[in-house]
Length: 399
Ligand SMILES: *Cc1c(COP(=O)(O)O)cnc(C)c1O
Image (cartoon, rainbow, N blue to C red; front, side):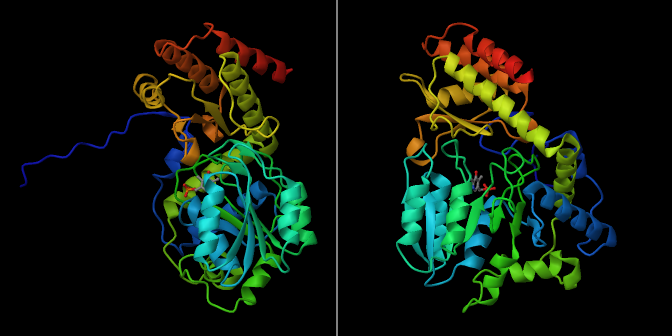
């Protein structure tokens, strides 16, 4: 017998208010402990079909190919670029944050040429810039935008972008990782051809699945490819042969059944709440948080009028220690928030109010905890101002 003993697994309970993951509902937690089934078990196949149908409602699409890719949100991004771009294609990509930069990286790895649309981190990509880029070259294959830039807290408007993509005959790809299930999104009505998300943000399922949808117009371009999709794991034509019942359920990889159960349960919870009610809950709690932070004299980073309710960026006041505050929130209050990414590192905090984490209690708790810690750092706050403003805001919205 080895004489070392390992600790029993006992992760602490946390309030997850970072950029994802969000807290999961007890029913989602329980789904993870249900009996494991094989990837072709008839019962599991019914759960797959239901999950696809629930995802169609959530994306608000009729697209047949709507399913969870077996990997995190990044897999949705990689699948989008590696299937729909190939060497020699030209893509126009919005770059106003960390995830826009990653999209560019993905497109370049596919051998595509990228026309980046730069905007300051914290501002939207303007339609004029999109049109100028689409006009600058013939036959642009794809326009890609991040709807909810998790690094900046900006909500990118999509309607005009979609219209322009159609006008210039480019596919329209949207990253909805931090918006699906929390912000307004309508894949079909908004003319989005390809869209992906992540299970652990506003859907409140553990990380590990990437909800994905593509319409026929996008899938038709797959047949026209002159080269094979470079990724076997993310080849949509192969994945469709397993996920779509009519295609024979051909083995591609072993479906992570427990995660699919969890996603199924999280999607049922969304259906029970009602998508519109859920989006309103996110809007209400996000607005209350914004009001509370501003009442504490803090500055919100994202462009006014284009702020996400699911993810808020707030500037760290001068003289306040970024890391110490985040560590104390975690250790003394059990609250996780995020630090800044890329150029915003050390400059902002990122507060997520996603899915099951988006509650009035969490807004008020975070504001009180933050007030105490900021006062300890020597930052002057009028005591109770944040909570009072948030409470006032919640009352106003409830009427
Ligand atoms: C989180 C996130 C991703 C990546 O998702 P992972 O699950 O971390 O792989 C992509 N895009 C945006 C906008 C995100 O917020």
